[in-house]
Image (tube, rainbow, N blue to C red; front, side, top):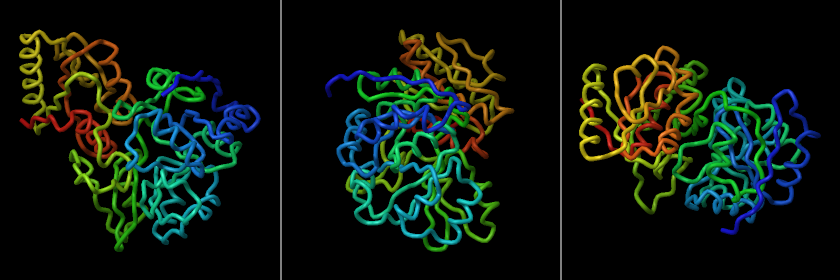
Length: 359
């Protein structure tokens, strides 16, 4: 695609208001593409009603066109313009988690959204982000905003404006720099069907949190989110992150998991030694408690295991650091798949491309 000038605006949470975001909002209104911060990761936004605008998002990212987009709104009243009325159970979730890192998949109203947003499905995923800059920008634009993560397709998601510019500078109209994302992982995507809530993608809201709000409703599907899903070619994914490789650094990544941390760490050391013998530039993905146990050309420390939120928050920056260090082989240490760790493990399994060793 042709290169363009990517404008930059720095707007803090305290400064967020329609008037301070008038220029990027105007760009969205005119069919442009604007990256903006949310509490999860940075999104690449476009008017969800405009096929031309949404097509520019797919082109900038290099994203497959059968991968649906999440639509972001600034006010819950906008939901009725886009979808059929939600079930009572879904309404309870919206009361509890909106604004926040929860996307709900609902039947789309015909003729409102670009068909590129839904990827030909009869449903659409919608969320209201919990970030003052995002909410003010969407409100000022006056339109629903389709926004996948603001990175090249398959790359680790961006949690800082600098990550966006690394991937998309010269490919998008602008980026609003609102600081670092607080959660660091994408939203949880859910769909209510057949009397149960199905987790299509684990994320910032955990299964336990969902179940606490819906004690009378089965919450299913999160365990499947830990696997490296592979849908048959003709089948369209119902939510982002279900079909294609995601979140991957450029070097080959091996994920090592197991019940015994010492055995996992010993296997990682063996894999690193073997890679060094092959002449590889090595990297290890680990946590603050274990960083001293490994010797590699680059050690990426992803938060503390005793603070799972820090692991989620620092995940994508850690994965991106391997590319900055020029690493060709990465050995990654799994984390406990409980709470937010379930979503972290989902991303690590995808980043490894299914290259996983269990010890």
